[in-house]
Length: 159
Image 1 (spheres, helix red, strand yellow):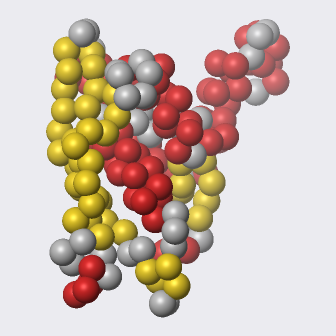
Image 2 (image 1 turned 60 degrees about the vertical axis):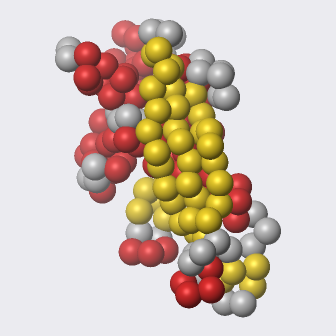
């Protein structure tokens, strides 16, 4: 396995139990944010120490013209006692249909973390469209059941 793909190959497959189908905006598969947080913690260590966001800020310069607030941050992670980082940006409309959303900072931060993790391969099968294929989802369900089974032989027979 190439060292460049090491992290990707550890985290690219998503447990279907932590996804749900969303019908809005044309439909997509949503990934549970805490699942991604758990996987990142398993790989990098504690949030804020082994991985996370730093230099995070909100840019309101487009609020009047577009209704958007830009979230600017640096995503970092540690591997083999070395720190790696890259810039990540996101946007959100804190006011929709003249109604404000007091949770918008939390929502955009969570989405920014998800997007940053996706750059490292976390849940790549969802982002690459594999979850649009029911056969793939069933295969992942079977793989996860096998991985979690105490009696592997019994689970293999069941499947």
